[in-house]
Length: 447
Ligand SMILES: Cc1cc2nc3c(=O)[nH]c(=O)nc-3n(C[C@H](O)[C@H](O)[C@H](O)COP(=O)(O)OP(=O)(O)OC[C@H]3O[C@@H](n4cnc5c(N)ncnc54)[C@H](O)[C@@H]3O)c2cc1C
Image 1 (cartoon, rainbow, N blue to C red):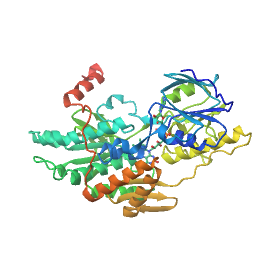
Image 2 (cartoon, protein in one colour):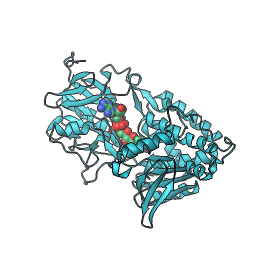
Image 3 (cartoon, rainbow, N blue to C red):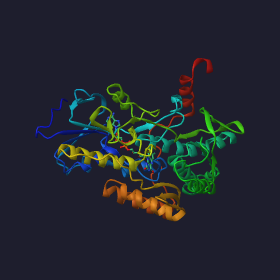
Image 4 (cartoon, rainbow, N blue to C red):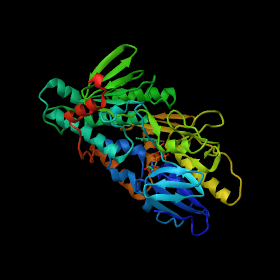
């Protein structure tokens, strides 16, 4: 596919990524005198903050995914291209995709991030992370399979291990997963099994830092910690996971090293920017931080390339006070809208202001009627925070259809404790598969 420059003579804006940043940039350019090409390797926008609900069977994948062509169907100046971007020629102003090259006048790179195992990539199979629909359905399969295997396990020790769940990383995703798993074990599966009591499942949340929800104020972290413990989650802060095997995890803390038998480890720690950041740094003066995020200018452009912008999770943006912006949806949304305004202004020959982030707050849910929320200087917890969480998440779901579906599912789950989408799909790796994978991943001297 060789796409020529805009036939209308209007500048062409190419946007890579239909996530929060890219989609908001595309939508905000609807009235600008430009032609927009939105490239994504998936044909849908994914509402990642609710992925943990797909991973725990509360929602179906389609509830949180909205087809990009549908979302942009009425925007005449925007076309959607389904393709994987593999590189750039910044000098020649071209984007390379698996389907062919696409030229641009302005380029917006918003390809997001993925999880990082801090150099321990061999843990990926044993401890799946949560970033895509496939990750979520994989985790869902592993979680519900663990209960199924425990149901027919004769050996009490093995049964115990099958009912032990470890979540690594005490950020919002880890906390939400831990809370949801505790509710599955205590409520959703209460009457489903004949040989095990699902409520005996032990859920451990492991965090290397001194508190869970490290991005939240101290008092809300403490409340989240307490709420998790009230749900029956064992919270281990200041504890590092130093090894993961198909049979157990090794934990290291001030009290020493211990091993915890488990067959289900979930990874909610560490992010790494899209590999496209390497291609950008190779072809420009831009530098990346340790998480691979591109250090951008005050207007989110690349140093020396004023027509190329990097936004959302891929960007490392230093505010005027020297603080770096976090990798959250609000930053991505605001940067997407800002870049659209900036491009529209430039096309009209007007000047633009640097990006200014308005911190609207921070939210994390722990479980039923339990959440923490920081809205500017106000701190909320418990039911009030939970309602805020529900409302704000519903408001941000991209299509009305999905908003309605999610609301209906939540109402159903609230009154029945049921998680209607608790399906085991795809191939859940068996113990033998995981052991074989680990043998392959270990250096020979460790075998
Ligand atoms: C499980 C989870 C829970 C979260 N919860 C919250 C929360 O509660 N609150 C909050 O504020 N934030 C949350 N976040 C973070 C938030 O989702 C991200 O900050 C946000 O999605 C970043 O938006 P983005 O547009 O930069 O990237 P993304 O939303 O990741 O979008 C990137 C897009 O680029 C596409 N893409 C990637 N590479 C290529 C390529 N080579 N070629 C073509 N297309 C490509 C992808 O398909 C994707 O559509 C959560 C994230 C996760 C994973």
